[in-house]
Image 1: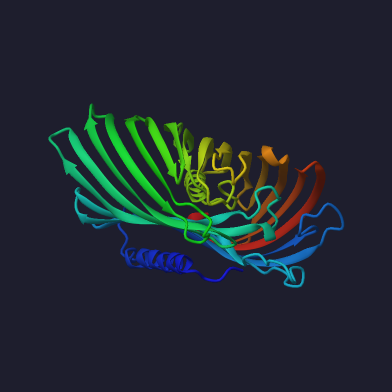
Image 2: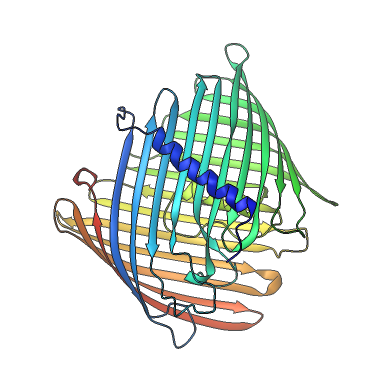
Amino acid sequence: MFAMTPLRATVSMCRALACLAVLVLSPATARAQDASGWSVFVGITQTDNLGLTPANGQPDTEPQAGFNWTYVAKRKRAETALAANIFYTGYDEKFYAGRRAPDSVTGTANLTLTGVIIPDRFFWDLGETFGQTTVNFAVADSPSNRQNANVFTTGPRLVFPLGARNQLDVSARWFSSDFSESPTGGSGYQALAALKRQTSHEDALSVAVSASRIDQQQLASSTNYDINSAFLGWNSVRGRSTYLVNLGFTELNQGLLKEQSPLARITYTRRLTARTSLSVAAGREFSSAAGAFQSNQNFFGVAASLSGGQVTTDPFRSDYLRVAWTVTGGRLAMALTGRVQRETYDSGRAPDAKLYGLSFTVDRAVSPRLRLGLFGEFERRELPALTASIDDRRIGLSAGVLLGANLVLTFTYARRVGDSNALLTQAAFVENRETLRLTYRPRSQR
């Protein structure tokens, strides 16, 4: 483990303040706009290949405990949205003797908090993204190859009306990132100004400029860099569909390296039915390890999966496509997600990377007390310059039995098969994992 640096101490303090703000601004006297759901669980997992080795896999039994919490509240002076899936895993210390042991407390959480200082004019925003990413991008994500990641943002936002249809939006953000096992965290700021015009009841056009500064404080060999952008925007809400398009130009300045690129951000969401929705995001822009991590998790939510790509101090040009289709509520729940991401580096220190992912879940109530589920996931990561790649496939089944008004007993079986190729050395692994979990959930949330 790395020693606690001033940056990491700052991130930890900010995260604690964020949680405190949620508690302070979320009193029990919730209004009608508020929504909350929670559950707690205990369980045990048995694996036959803890380290994902090609042969002679190490079996292990891991106790688990955790909670899920969603909270949305809108009040006169504050708006809060929180989604968290946090759990504890008791790893076998003997297996990791002399090596890096995994983080026992892991999971995912997204928090956004907006304080209203002057209604319709002056706001203060705060955000926290917590999750996991790989330590080594070219190695399978076994427990010892995962690390906790945090991205914290905060800053003011002002709105200046310029007539009946025009307004000027100005915002500033300070942000900080931390990766628990990689000295690649940093901090910085972003300033943005956007002139907007409401062209109709559904449509708005904008012209915007932004400037970002990222400081890499944990590695002396790292070079700080700036990302400056100018773009046109179109935002439209038409019935069940929402469109957000930003097209423009962006520039990266990193020491002697200067690079220019088109900028594109396109987001489309549609409520297909009362219980079905579709979301699509695509674009090209300069980004960072923290930015890619945060962007992926904000799009896909707090499902317990890895986010982002390589963890590096170097900026890169990110080309991405993300898709999510979900069905919620009633007897049937389904989700299908996919993403493609390409990272292009010009610094010469980090290799280009590609990531492809596809996952699905199906969960159906076959009786008032029994639910059955099927899930699967495929991910491929590539580092072409190093002739390194890894394919990771999972398939599994689950069965949940309602034991009482508030208790659910769930059994899950998952089979995982992976193939890696690094410097022409081929390796494959297989893991079988069984999990038994007892969950307490208020009856109204079943």
